[in-house]
Image (tube, rainbow, N blue to C red; front, top):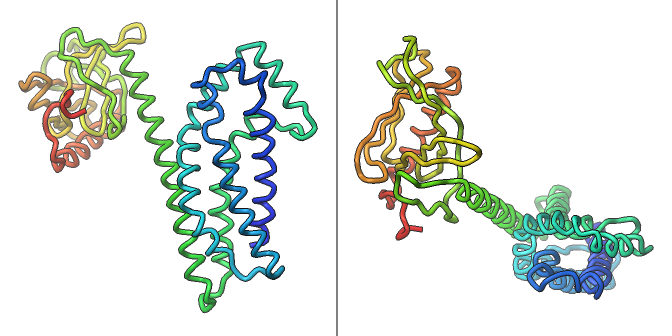
Length: 333
C-alpha cells in the first residue's frame, strides 16, 4: 500500500514535467496544428489532474496513520475518474505514436524537442517515455492491488474491498486494451480499403467497428478436374481475406487487390476433396450479387489447407447464428 502511494507521487512528478515542460511549451506548440496537439498530448492534463486528486487522498490517509490499514476504498472512489481519463488516453496511443513518427522528420521540431529533453528535470528521459506513462501506470496499479490482495488474509475485513478494487481497475485496463485492439483493427481496414479495387463487383464498405481480419493469404485457383493430384491443371493465384463476417476474394497486382467476389461467411463453405489432399472446394452459396459460385482452391501444404477449411467452417457456424445474414452493405455499416 505504501508503494502505491510513493509510486503515485513519482508518477505525478513525471506527469507534471510532461505537461508543464512539453505540452505547454510555446515553441513546440507553434509548430503543431490544434489537431496535432490533441493527437500528441491527448488529455494528458486531465490525467495529471486525476493523479493529483488521487495522491492527495492517499497522502491524507497516510497522515492519519503511518501504518496504512487500507487504500482500496480510495481506489474505488477514484475509479470513475480513472476510466474517464485513461480510456481515451490509451485508446489514442496508436495515433500518438504515428504523430511522433511524423514529427521527428521535421528538423526544426527535433531541435526544439532535443533542447527540452536535455533539461535537468527530464533526467535524460525522452518525450516518448513521458507520453507512455499513463498506460504503464494504470497497468501497474492493477498489479500492485493484486499483490495487496495476495498478501491480505481472507479473514481480513478489507479483503472484499481490495478484491472489488482489483476488479474495478482490471475492468478499466481491459477496456483500454479492447479499445486499442479495436482501433488497430479499424486502421488495418482503412489501410486495406485503400488497396481494393471493385472493377467487376459492387463496391463494399469495408470499415466497421465490429469487423476484423481473421486470416489472409495467397492460394491457387485450380481450373480442371477436381483433384489436387493430377498434373496439367491450370492455376491462378487468388488472394483471400477472411473477416469475421465475410470472405473477400481478389487478384493481387502491384500491391493492389482487384476484387473478384465476396460473400457472408454464413454463405461460404469449405470442403476437403479427400484425406491428406492439398485441395479444397470453396462454395459461395450467395455471393455479392446473390448467385452461387464454386472455386477449387489449392494450398501449399496440408497444414495450410486444413487451417483455411477450419477457419472458414468456424466462422460459417458463428455467422449463421448472427441476426444479420445478408451481404455486407451500406445499410448495415
